[in-house]
Image: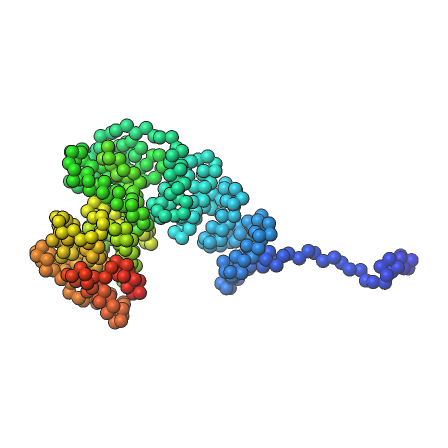
Length: 454
């Protein structure tokens, strides 16, 4: 034993043995794994830093140094631990798609496509995944869904158009429109569209919910009655509506998908949430929601007017909720009475909906100020409810005479919620919106700014 100890002493020069420590993790990985342990602890104190600048800097350093698989593993664990942290899920999906691991990313993207703040990006990545796997029809369907919400989303329009040119044409022989007799119980095929149910009709045509069999989505299909084929006015209004709405290209305007003059039909975005007029049957909106909806309306009108278009029939029945959720976008439809150029036209006949027509519009003069007046009436309706509107603006006879006026008073509940300062500002805004002189009304953009401050 002594000789053995001597040998060891001689070999290491009398120095003690040193045990080699385990390799330390890089700082960014150690930080993320430590944070991950805290996330999964049941005693989480709620003060975690997931998603802050330091968190994303650590993730970026992993990616920059080629440790993508480590980043994927760590982010996957965060997603499993915090499934409602959609920003982390979105970044994980993007990394997977960058690595062409679309099959792994697809379930995550499909879930993110239901989350409002990430749905556009998620659908774009789903479109890319579908195209890379040869499913061009699915890719186009995802891109069309993006364009229905944001017509200017980067690359979506150009890619959708390219895919449309690449897909083989679908044979759609002319079929008589079932606008007069109505639909059979099982629906009806109308070329590439299968009519599901009727949702409205007028003297010129009928509107259906239809299934686009080519792109596998629901649309609103407006079909003119057969007897209007040789009548120029209904046809002209329908095609004007299509071309104007398509030209505006704004997320606050109902998207137009297709126009077929030969078969007298117009395919548009289907807004499943219904009309604002239906919502107002239940009474006034909460003040905060009313002001948010007014902001949406004035902002959309500002974009419409900036394109040189006057809508001419702004009313709750033409304001639609994009879907049925509480936070659904409010979009403007029905441009059948629109005027191009944005200038006052004193030669046209008075057209519109009486309760929302500005005094000058009743005389046939239409300009952006008339749309602003109508939006002012709607703002009154939002904070008072439809039942109170007649009492505020007068009866039908007064409307016909053109001498119905707003009382200048806010409902007690709205005034109480706003407080004296903001209530006074709202009264001032409404007074300016509803004055007889169109030159004295604010622009839609200015009205949007004022509403936003309230």
